[in-house]
Image 1 (cartoon, rainbow, N blue to C red):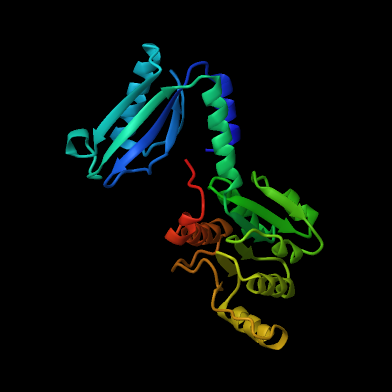
Image 2 (cartoon, rainbow, N blue to C red; image 1 turned 180 degrees about the vertical axis):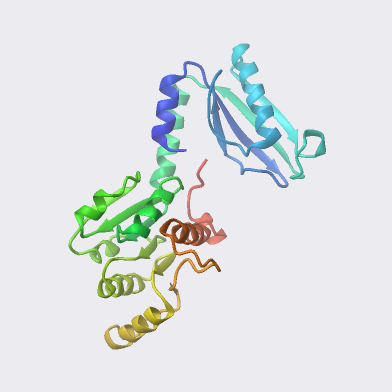
Length: 275
């Protein structure tokens, strides 16, 4: 969830229970710290869905009716509740006062600030499709282009940067960022991609194109970037066996690759999990 969504939810709902997975033993649908917010007629977030979430939702609403401040659940995730995770979870339900509401918003905002950055260079068809999908994921997506008319076509809720020198954006990117290069100009693609490789701290780097384009880029690197290695470059991108070249399909395959890289075990160890 986004902090703006939580703020709007809390503004609308007079009484709210914060439902948190406080302990996990074995396998479970969500990790410790996952939360959802429940009022008498609405909810925001998820602790994993299924029967576990239904039971927690029901318990939260009972607690609200009885004006309970705090209660706990200890739930085995087995056949008796129609789930097969095989683990066990403890859930803490707390009625939120004004201080708890402020703390919840601050926590989500802190998580947002810690989101990994994903830089999309090029606001053409595929770039805009990428932005539309990344806006729903726990990343800070930045859509970059030198063409204002193309940026204006994007309706995604992501950061947009208009710049005459897109490659300069690479130099200020946080370590562990992901970069997707698909501008309207092959020479610019090569320049931006070589900047990312030179940076040396990206979590994932991809450049749109074919095997021929990769070979041309590697030739460019040999001629202009002495000592620069290209093994970490993904090019072509979005090649998962599909022959469908529609922008939304390409974007979906690329997003899957990027999110897999950003949520791998090494990446998770250095980031703040989203609730």
